[in-house]
Length: 286
Image 1 (spheres, rainbow, N blue to C red):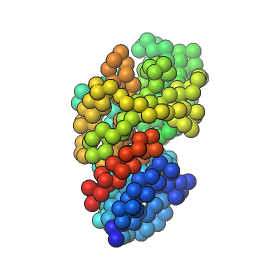
Image 2: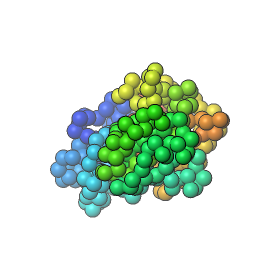
Image 3: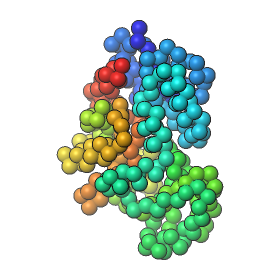
Image 4: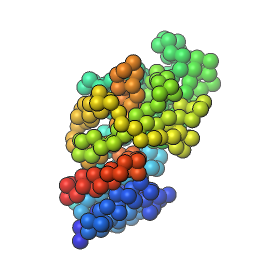
């Protein structure tokens, strides 16, 4: 029997409910699916025809170990989806700079290297930004991400310095449309648009993740939004099995916030056919 691994983290050893929908479809097709906790002994992957990286939601806290694990899978002859090179490229948010160079619209961003010195107050003043978002270059689920303003920049400086001591960072102009209109998440399988949700932060916050009180609802985006997201996806080096393209409509133009290619929630429960489409896309990779 064909065996597929679904990589996950220790906290979600039996997979999250959304991924269980895809697993049920695969098992109904006669495929053996095995959850694999990525921090366990790598020999557990032996016998897997492929490894689908899913809810490894702690990878950003130990990225070097995560990449070593992915490379170990490849060395053992287990194909990884999305591919190892794509995962490494997508881990560091400076991939947005690559996509911007290829014509993808992204927020105004200052890119900072590890160990670089940056005075937040001076940066905001020079840019004329009333609000900005500070993000580690390697992060997930808004980890160590915060909003700064000219009034708080000096007190926020220590938080930026801590990030830069460990990794690079991004300082982005705050995109207010996230508060007013929400953020799109468009899901693609094998490069084809599947379904979408609109995510919104809770009142008084800027983070759209459910961990921070954010909410989401299924929505059908206008064709122009889908095409803009598809264009951004076509600029990714390689052919991803799955992708979640997150963005915001700013003055009618789709602005990419994140290109999620490692472990995004795919919102399979929000669309009746989504789990089946994902399962079929996985089977095609066999």
